[in-house]
Length: 438
Image (cartoon, rainbow, N blue to C red; front, side, top):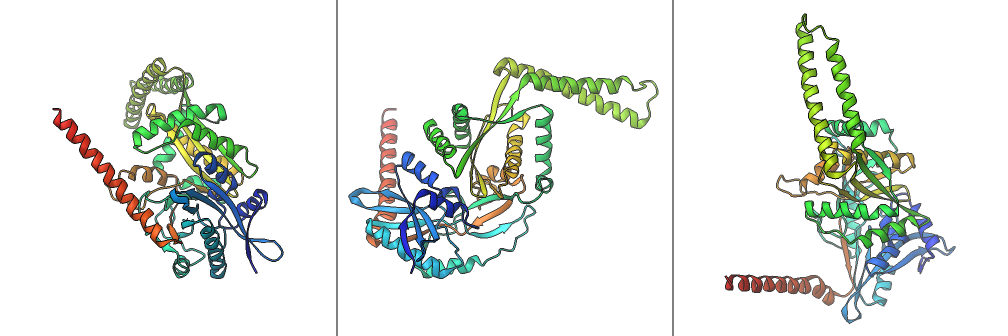
């Protein structure tokens, strides 16, 4: 007989982080504590245990408190168990539903990172070790309500992502980078840009770049305290970790590197017999002369940058979360200047190497889109992440188990309708006031 019980964090994390297929930082106790502090949610660390008190399934349940003493529960990235075992899912569902009902929950939400479809970097569909359609059917039969195969960022967590298998040799991983990505990383290295690991004192710098990215990409970010708290909780946890990668340009170094390149070009030109050149030598001279002109332009340009921005500028700041055998690029902020240094590309390549060296097995770029139409404003984000050669992953989607049908209808239909009506009404009143005062 299996029973549901609250687990000590140590026992809980030992099970979750070592699970062969479902370890995820969103199911870690560190994320639960962060959600309590910054999202005002109540975390429960629950486990399904057998007669010998061995954990066979577990979940972080985040309780969102609602008016009239109602609530709902969210298990980010779903229960940690074997989804091919229908009987285990059934038992876990029954126990969690009973627990939720005891708390006056309206519904329970899950979005397990069960892969529905996977393509490699060439766009070739990859065979899965299980049948996702069978898991989909089982969840439906157990009473879970599927919320649709969304294509963008409509759900709590992204339904699409790119993942890189870090168990492959580094040379193979890098060979899957696009041609332009390789060229841009090489240029960043040639310009002697730098990628380093930051500390808590660099979080304000990271936050600044996040605000710039937010303005440029038109998405909602968080305040500085949000990122600082996340960094503190993750780095202070024995099972999770946050690493801050900083991509910088030191303009003195960049200028010296370009001046060295210029000297090398001039040295090549100086040894050429100008009066008796063959056709191929003339072509080479033309090419060298062009390189010389471009390099001189770059030197002058970077000298101007130095006068404008100072010697050292942080252009990229990425926060990587590690848990179990996986790592996620959770947040990435980038400056809108000096983009021709391609520091952002170099920063990505360096934390891929870092994760590989740490023994991480899966590197997740944490979110992309499924709607690849040319007018999708997020297509640029997708194309950038695609350049690093990861597998294009589609997850099974978001599910609700309704425990109070009336209140579920009120919460998911009437309340959003009312809020939308109020927003439209307020906009009309503002427009009327503005137009009436013309």
